[in-house]
Amino acid sequence: MRFSALAAVAAALALSACATSVPAPVWTGGHAGWTAAEAEVRPIGLGIPGGAALANGVRFAGGVELVLDPGSPLHSLSDLKLVDDGDFVSVSDAGDLVRGRLRLDAAGRLAGVDSLRWRRLTLPDGSPIADKADGDAEGLFLGPDGLAVAFERRHRLWAYGPLEAPTRPTPLASPDIAFPLNDGMEGVSAAPGGWRVAGESGGVWDCAARGCRVVTAPPTEPTPDSDYRITGMDRDPGGDGFWVVERRFRPPVDVRGRIRRMAADGSLGPVLVELSLPSTVDNFEGIAAVGRGDGVRLYILSDDNNNPHQRTLLLAFDVTPAR
Image (cartoon, rainbow, N blue to C red; front, side, top):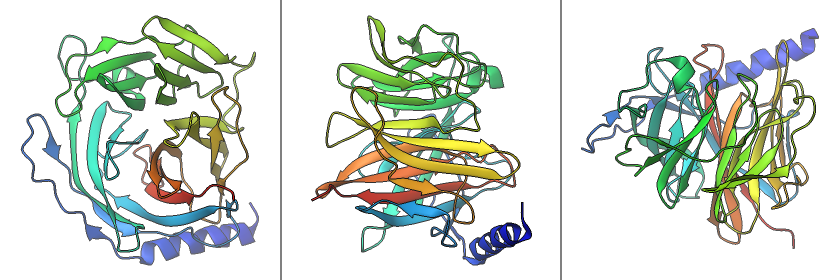
């Protein structure tokens, strides 16, 4: 990388570090099985101009970084869904289920999070997940029957029942394909009549209790990490499509993320948001959508991989329809 690019990256990190972090209000509820999790929250913007491209009709609506202790259960968050317009749920690569609440300022911009809590997901025998190979949760959705979680390494999609009190999991239909070890069902979402699955290395399927059908066939050769790949998906609250977040990584430091809309037939629309250095960017793997006015509010979440050189970022964007 050229020196000028390195200097820009260093400046962006320095500006981020200058922002003050404050403790997130701690959860004080009493639901059995949940444990409060502490974090500090730091406001962030899009960083140095030049790396963030927003399409017409898209507006940045605030962002925060979760500042976490090394042993926090809030590291490695891999997906994001909204329970309502404020409460959210996430999963981690270690097999933890995480909940919290978004805080908006008077203008409706994302200003923080609070009421963070977590619990360990279980295996079918009721024992807590202890092995990384069992607990590598990468996606989730909320359906009529409650919570469903997608795992990779040991690829499977499990139904856990009520969100507040998950039960022993039962299997759900998932694509009949041999996913690569670390490239599984990254994008999962509730869908009309069932759920939709997007493979990280390619392919889209619509599934229901009876099985899955191919929407977009996976490529003959898996899409590499050096190309954009879908890492998160949520149903469009205003139509029959979906919103997806994609990630691209080219060593040593060229990581990028972008947001697009997926039609019901699996085709992808134009890029609405693209983030790269020297602007704010990290390993974005989660996306959640909620209706707001005549448009939609999108939140994207990054997975820090429990790596001190990465960050857990939550960014908000408002998308209004073309007039």
